[in-house]
Image (cartoon, rainbow, N blue to C red; front, side, top):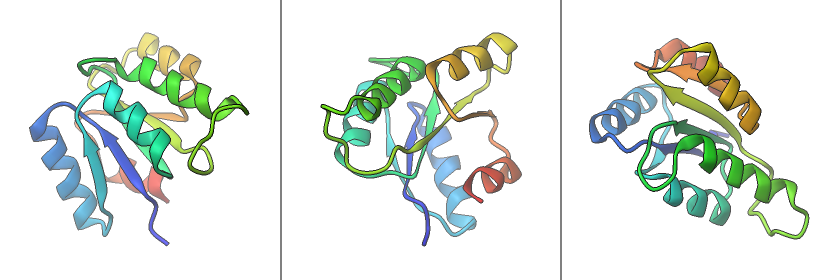
Length: 124
């Protein structure tokens, strides 16, 4: 069974590239363009993997991930299924960026431009 993939990315060109790359690998994904939207969609539908841009309007990716994970960790908040894995996607590959993502509870980090092999590894 193919994983349900949600991509939080505000840049339309990056959205197209991710969609094309995933399509060529046999996957499909839903795209959302800002941090508030990804939190809403992530808590309404079950997802296996969320690729999270760190720099988005409305709410940055780190805070969006924190909110999603907080909901899954709160037994009083209804969630749509098992907790999705969340991977940061950003051109910033500094150790500080990785530490922020890890501290927020993200499962990993993928540098932009996204490499097909990195995607393949995450999606298994």
